Length: 166
Image (cartoon, rainbow, N blue to C red; front, side):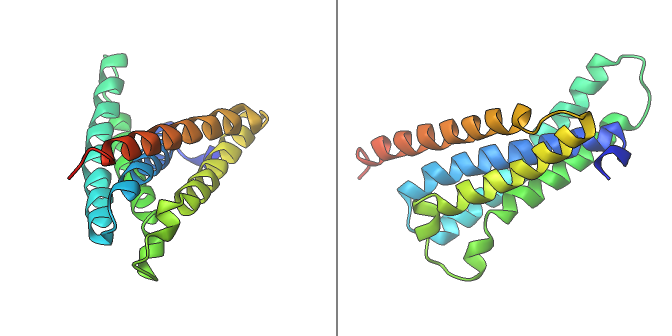
């Protein structure tokens, strides 16, 4: 099915999923160390989904227009829309545990953000590797290292800065 999508839609979906997972996991890793208020988490992730989705979507639109000067197709617009939709869906999906409980335990210990993020990236990596007839490790290993680096860096930064607040 991934192969049957247009190139523009694949670009938007891949970019939106990748960015949504990495940025949301990083934001949750840092923010969950600094607050016990679920509403702050919800508002932050919603703001991230909208602002980052629009910013990155328009960025992909402009970069495609700049990269292919003579292209008058709707491809860049389709990439923009598919990225925006995917980014919002992915970012908001990280809030699923809050539908069942206001306890931030799974956010603070990073079990949920890491498990969900790696699961979503696995799906993307599997579909991409399958469509290109490549091994999944080509994408999954770098993705896993990136997400771990982002989580560790943001959690450490947040913990250090939290000591200087109040």
